[in-house]
Image (cartoon, rainbow, N blue to C red):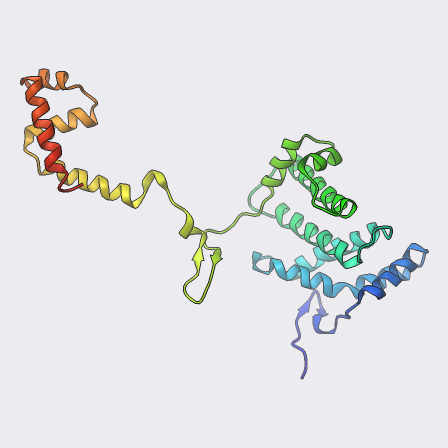
Length: 257
């Protein structure tokens, strides 16, 4: 059966070669020895790796041709900067480099603008994180990143948060056999919730059912913030009467709230 043909940048992806770790290591050894032809072989032999990485960004509404070209830039940087003294496969080193290059492209072309200085700090931090991860064999701390990038820890945190990709409110966060749950389903506006809205309607209905004098007392007491003595002086009744009418009005309103 013929493979499904997809062309990216004029390349038939079904015909891309698949290079294993041993072949990559051999070519890298040749490249370090001065054989420049090995560099081109490495690039061509790892294009399928680039293709697999950019699939992660397929939903970003960016042309796949553009993402593929940017991914190839990341691949070339990985080839040029790979240190054979570290006991890791080339693909292990190349994947985060390719991802980083694609993310940088997406950030720079995003409609949400981040200052150049913040982007530079974030990019240095990401580069140092990749380097330190290989050297330390673990994820570096913020303090270690800050020292390597020669900035303050709070600058690292702020810069990395600033470049986070925006998430659509219609992004699915959970899906099983039933309907998907989206980000918008998890967002709650405490300042204008449905419950508060319904309570406001119930309060207005309760006030409207009161006699005119009790309506005035409730509005003066709870909407205008006046004391019972101030209400009694304005309406022309005793403070005790105001207290009695207020309690009676609130009791009647509880039927609606």
